[in-house]
Length: 175
Image 1 (cartoon, rainbow, N blue to C red):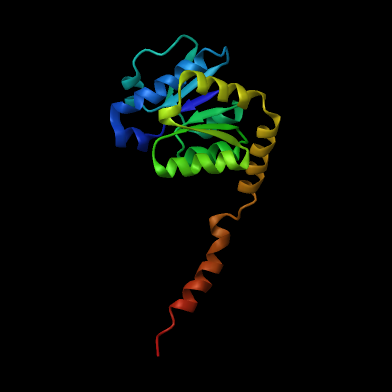
Image 2 (tube, rainbow, N blue to C red; image 1 turned 120 degrees about the vertical axis):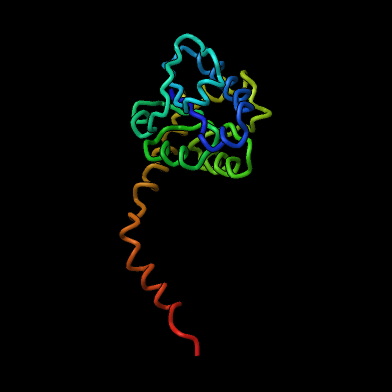
C-alpha cells in the first residue's frame, strides 16, 4: 500500500498538508497492511513522527514502488494518478483543489478509484474506502482497463508527423 502527497500541493499549502495526510497515514497504518509513505523530505519533516509499521521513502520515484502495491492513497495529482494507472493500482484520492477534484471524479466515475474531499476525509471514511479498494475486484478490473487505455496511447514521437502536418496547414501565408 502506498501513500503519497504531491510536491505541488505541499508547495501551495505548506504545513497545512499535514492535516489530511496525517489522517490518511493514521487510517491506513491501522489496517495491518504494509505501508510505504512516499513523500518529499519537506513533507516528511512536517509530519513528524509516523506510526510504527509505516516505512518512509523520501523522493522515491513512484514507478519503482507501484508495481508492488495493491492500492494507493494520494492527493489527486494527475501525474500520480496516471502513474498508478500505468500499473493498474486502485486509487483513493483525497482532494482539495479543483484540478485534483476533477482527477478524483474521473477515477471514481470509471471505477478505478474512490474519491473523498479533504474536508470529509475522516479517519473512519478513509479506512472504509481503503478497505473497499483492497477487496473490490470490480475496482481492480477498472484499474486494469485504465492501464490498457493508457498503454495503448501512441508515444509522443509517433504524433510528430501529424503535428507537423497540422502546423503546415496553419502556417500557410494569408492571402
